[in-house]
Length: 218
Image 1 (cartoon, helix red, strand yellow):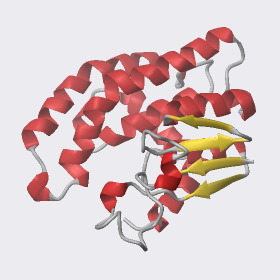
Image 2 (cartoon, one colour):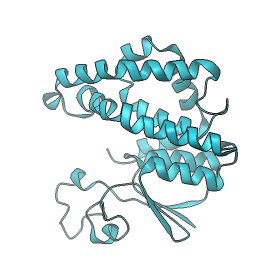
Image 3 (cartoon, one colour):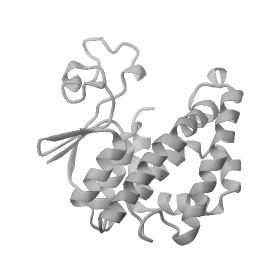
Image 4 (cartoon, one colour):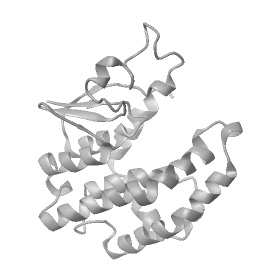
């Protein structure tokens, strides 16, 4: 039995989307981020990332984690790569070359995109207006121009990242790029990326995940 630890309003969304794509049955333990709680130490606080029970699962204190028949894994993109290889069919690698490409694009998203895309999300959308810094948002947008151009060039070939089909690589990378979507100018210059995001977000499994996310408390 697969157990996913985390709420939809977190990087667990990536793993939940993948699970829906594959039609996996799973139990979700709704571990919330401790910083979102007014008093994480309150006796009636829900299970959160600093709860002793969760720290036994993931001593790093981050979500998501999974337990797949006793195998415990952390880090959302690594979890997705594992699940796609074990259960994913066409979402997973057909051979070792595709396995390498899927790993490469996932690491690329973490190193080249997410440090900047998360700042765009924070300073254009997520934080209260008084806590946003336009200079940080602008610097992040400028830093992402080159990586988004690289992604656009790769997607212009087939519309997908690996094997000419939708795979776990598209889920992993698009979920990182999604943080930057408020910066429209980035995508005006990257039509293949814009079309790819639209195609990813039109998938029924993504729509299901997002509907579940919207149903969660903000």
